[in-house]
Length: 269
Length: 260
Image (cartoon, rainbow over all chains, first blue to last red; front, side):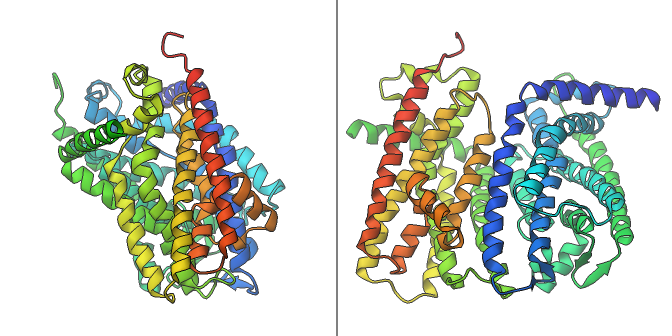
């Protein structure tokens, strides 16, 4: 176990150093995040004109929602899907098939390193801008539950994206599928609008899909109140449900990975 | 001019043939663009259904702004925006030099190489949305249509200028795909009725960084909200396009290739 942790640390640190050379790439978020947020401020300012709440959210809660969504996006950002598809398509996956470490764990270690760098280049500066420039209340209602929920969101996003990447083992060119799926994922996760704005029937479906556990649920936990499809959960119940969903997603990912490896053919394999 | 048309036709044929090698991927990409373009209107619809609205704008009027935005992208993206991706990948790989050797202007070659048939999918989503938005409005007058047509040309010019700025930036900021995020962020101001922004920001978005001209001003003209004086907006669009071309050529001069 200690050896495995050392391996994860080494891969994570190498990825951190590699991406630190391209830090301006990440630093673009200091422009992108606040500009997109500014648009949201104007939109919701206009929408709340003469209204106290919309679908149970006040104006300040709505701004906090989009602020937290942005931060969760930066914390749990993932491109394991793109990376895996590129490796399979180009044949470079062969080198991973020969290593004494499953690729999914390698990819996860890379994500840990990549996002550790993002923490101080993207997450903390953008959070500071939201608090000090836009005056958004970014204080979590229950810090413990919020941190736990964001960590689970980190895992969930990885598992889902990795499963999408695994489609490359079955499809010749899976980029289209990947992009369609990721767009639907963002819509269903509540990135563009809180899921409580969706029609009731859709909310019931979204409640049972895994996507809400990436963005909507952790954001509502952060704000301190979870409700979807008329179902109210306490913070503990919501995070418990999220943990169960992440565990299922992890099992599915490992099972799919095994099936994909059995299907994989490469030069000399 | 005949040479340009011939080049464009040849590129379109080749790109289409290339896409046909992966037909399901092509179909999915077009579908993705259609769905992707309908996300913001879908969100607008959900918000209006919740009882909220942009003050002074009905649902169909707000959707009209977003439809014009999508239509403008449907025209500009296949022809101009591909050059951003071309510059991004070819400067990084060092293959941009090949464009310098061809017997046509480099900017034209960058645009032609970046031609992307997938992006015509945006015309489908834009047209559907445009039709839906107009179905809920009283028919625009002939004057409104004329103003709209002229302003729509300005809208395309602005998107072309933005492509030139982003593409030019990539000669220095090598390989950064974040330019697409920057585009999405900056142009997101143009997807909503300009009246929701503060007066000073509205002026900035019309005369300094004319993002408002992409959709808000043409849509307002179609709705008959503006008089002929709105055509003054063509001037900043033209200036922006000229600045974009100058910037791109200046950045190209700074291109050092793989040899330094």
